[in-house]
Amino acid sequence: MQEQFITNKSGQKISVILPIHEYEELLADIKDLASVAELKNEPTVSLDSVIKKLEANDLL
Image 1 (tube, rainbow, N blue to C red):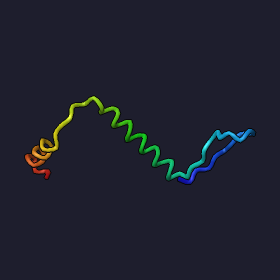
Image 2: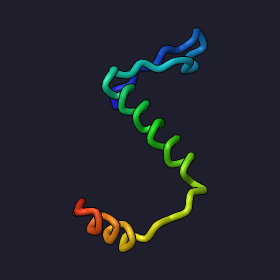
Image 3: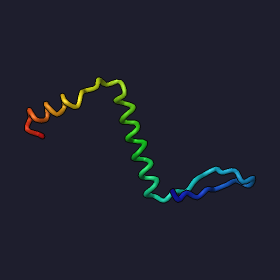
């Protein structure tokens, strides 16, 4: 990561500057994490069950 920092007069970091592509990647990661958090309490399905369902619908 190629971050740069903005500091106040006493040298404390108060802001960060990131290349836009790194910023966009971080936003995408946050969105993915939010999606996972929303599904946290959803029931799980076994892989075998998913494969059988896909095969039954000619999707695999």
